[in-house]
Length: 400
Ligand code: OVM
Image (tube, rainbow, N blue to C red; front, side):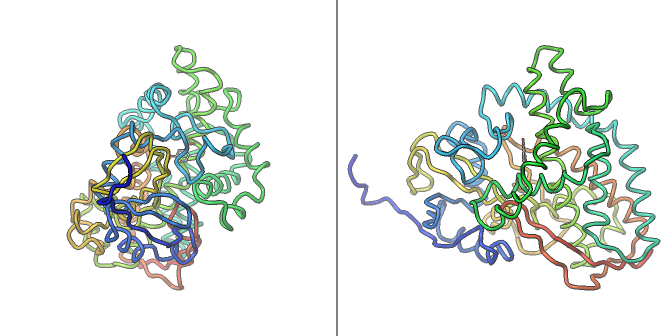
């Protein structure tokens, strides 16, 4: 009732989607963590959270922080979405519960283990070729080449037109931000790219044994409609490429930048899983997601109203000194589980078993063959409203 004289409202004028912020977000993350448990971003009229505890609490409380109004800046209740909303990412229970159950089953660690042999063989072959070459672009030749081969094969889509997959991911992940220059550039050829993607999502376009057709098997079992199955194949093609591309690129960057950590991994290959968690903590390929409040809520004394957009800085939570010792040092021996890069709660990454399989396959192949990675030129960043990663990583490898 009335004015609460004790209410606090930390404010920041920073633009988290500006080139300056996206190029070097970490000082801004620190400023936002220090400003308060929730910070009003005046430029957009939205809230932001950057501390580990608050980000985690928001992700866990899907009733207060919903996804159905979109997980980008745009509020689907106020403006039309650029594409039909995802029925898993941009959905709340009960719809989300039903779609999620199907993908949880298809992408379970046991189900994904079936792919291990193929994924390992492809990783060994690619690593063998690249190390023989001696120098290569860590992005185009490895971080992009590998997921672009193994993931569409696993989903069961044809070879034709796969060059549309990266542009589509670029559209999807830029679209979570404002309609800035990055968004406009990503959308340059949107109609053709979107049409190609949709043409690959039907039952008729999918190989009989792949992950895509397994979604259609759930239609036959009465769990989904035919249209919903196509939408979930679209989720595979939206979420399954760029995330792993940026993750592999960031891993290469970390090991080129911190060669002593590569040496530790070579001497202890059993640290592979922890090392990947640390890469995800330290250089999160997915930096942010939004939620929308469904009621007024008090966050550590800061009062958020109903229906407000909340920008969750996963990557800032990952370096919160309240949660991590020496948060800004890359240390593969630390217990990095508990990072927020896969999210948590009901929307926690359903594809993480595939992401882990891809990374393990690639880095197990490299750890046997590579003594050290050296950057032979400046890495070039690729800016994106959601993703953090590189356009190119000019690498030379010292063979083992
Ligand atoms: C989807 C989707 C798109 C982008 C990311 C994502 C990280 C999901 O279409 O369901 O999850």
